[in-house]
Length: 92
Image 1 (spheres, rainbow, N blue to C red):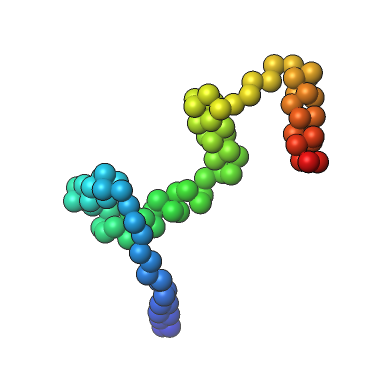
Image 2 (tube, rainbow, N blue to C red):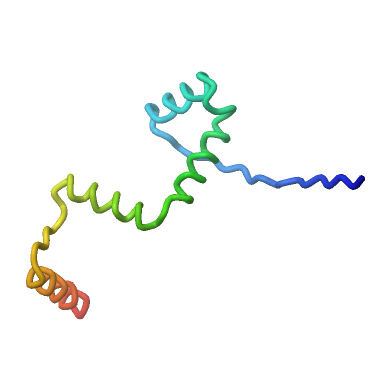
């Protein structure tokens, strides 16, 4: 019987967090949802990276809409005019 042992080298990083976010993370760890802060951070990063990029863009667009920073295009003419504006800005 052959047994293979694979070692994965993990890099250490330092991050700064707002106090409220750190407290929320500590609560999740204390309640047993994660074994450690590293476990929580790895899981969060994997979740974000596995999300479809189009879903991230749609969420970003919805966030901008809720902040009142979006442009509503209701017709083909609106779309053409908006794209013309973008092209003109790009040429400057």
